[in-house]
Amino acid sequence: MGSESGSRGLRKRWNELSSGQRKVIVVAGVFEAFAKVAMLRDLRRRPAEQIRGPRLLWGATALVNTAGLAQVAYFLIGRRRST
Image (cartoon, rainbow, N blue to C red; front, side):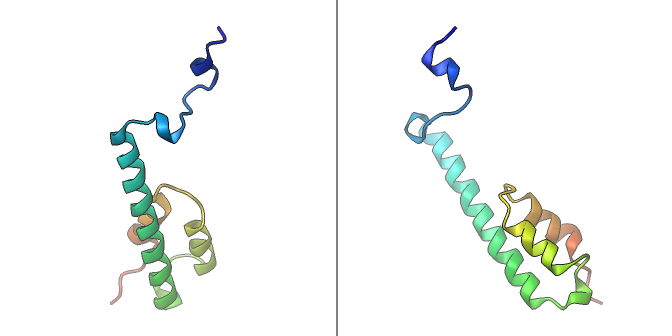
């Protein structure tokens, strides 16, 4: 009760993480940044009739930190197939 590491719960400082954990975080951050740019670029270039739902709503989800889930959802279900 009252140990210093126990009172912080699961939160660790960057320098307390192992090099493997740091690499995973950096790779995930790069993936999310790439996915956001790709999603926003596609939203800007794609005609509105080829997007499921409001363009503004999809764009707003790109601004939220979602670990890439919003971007994956956009590419899987947010775009209509071109005919």
